[in-house]
Amino acid sequence: MKKISMCKLVFIFLFVSFSFLHLVAGNETCDTIEQYGPALRATSVLSTEGYGQLSLLQTVHIYWLWVLHLFIIVVLMALYILYIRRYNNLLKQEVAERKIMEQKLQQYAAELKHSNEMKDLFTDILRHDLLNPAGIIKGYTDLLLEIETDIKKLQYLKNISRSNQKLINLVEDAASYTKLDTIGNIPLEKTDLKGIIINVIDSMSIQISEKHAKVSLSSSGLYPARVNPLAEQVFVNFLSNALKYGPYSGNIGIDIVDAGNSWKVCFADEGDGIPEKFKEAVFERFKRLEAGAIKGSGLGLAIAKRIVELHGGTLGVNDNPAGKGSVFWATFPKV
Image (cartoon, rainbow, N blue to C red; front, side):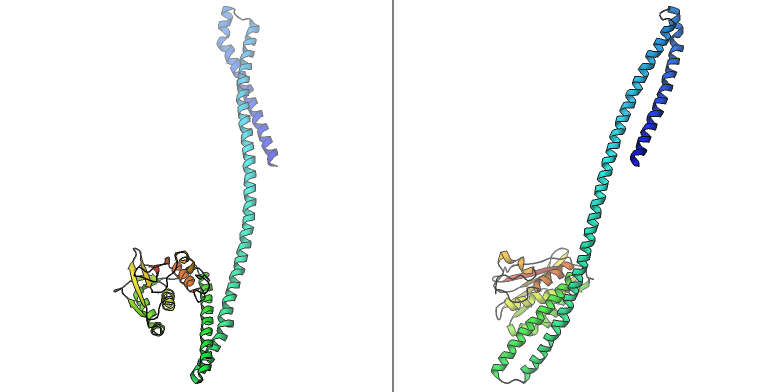
């Protein structure tokens, strides 16, 4: 339908152009006769037939000139039509590709929605179907530990309690990571980082005393930052790892450093340290340095990393400059 309309348009253009050409050529012939006719008669150069020959020559010259113009115009129009056709073909191809991409995106969105639904279901299973039975086991084990007097049975009960606590920690870490992985942003409010760290130290006083560790916070003053209460979990993880992998009666140093637009919180321990090639892997989920080298779920530092990322900060680990051990650090935005 578009091709027929275009042909009609070209035909009309050529018809009007040639009509206009004929009209102009006739006018030019008349003007020539009127202008040069008396002079030609006076000199008897041309006869009456000469006037017709002159007019015919001038007319032919004008026709050829306009035909050349029309030819150029037709060629340009043909090129323009070819360009339009090619552009339309490319446009159709692009539209078809976009439709295919839209279908793929819709399919991906549906799969992503299903994946999120399965993730939510997995989280619910962890929290209810696994954590509740583990809590019941813990309750009965703690009760038996209080009333049992046989040394051998007490040892068995302690092993049960310790293994069950590991299971509870694993379930809680997996549920926390699954929840954090689906969060795009978190609300931040003005909070003193030092106050959060002091609360973490107080809440872990029993673990600290059991390890006979010395925890020192060298920073003084206020450190206002834009943080979420989830930031406390980062410091709990850092301190827990320092206690777990540090020596008995070891030192754990905590410091808050000014890092420009953010505060850099550092936890230094006196453990075995982390080889350079594993310093990035320790923050990935379910990663361990080597078989049997690190106990735990492998999720603690991955959770800490995700929380710090939600704050727009960074975290990492360096060698302890004071000697043996590592320094885990994380940055949080200033107010």
